[in-house]
Image (cartoon, helix red, strand yellow):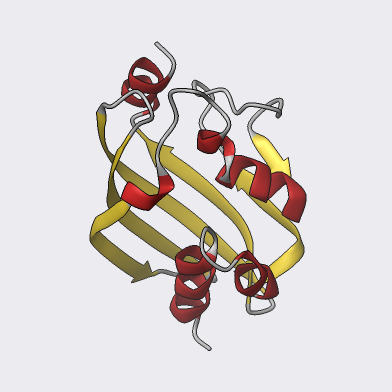
Length: 136
């Protein structure tokens, strides 16, 4: 499987088939989140290990104003294979929040692979807009 295919398998299954996503991740898989958006039940920006990754992945479900998973759509999706075992994953996420608001945000993940598995990924997105909509 190419690095791009591995990253696709990971991200397209993270919320729908976590065990499949886990099978293409290292034991110490790490999610680096933005500094300005707190993650419920987690401290800091470096979330190491599968349980920590799943905590971040499901964090929007844990707040009363969070997103409604059934309404989530990803549009404008791009996968770019780069040098040094990295893949760039870019998309726009659209969904409804539990507060009845429309959420639209652009995301970019820099994904690093090791030994053919997802080892580390760092997110880039408009956290100020998300904070104001979800928590503000």
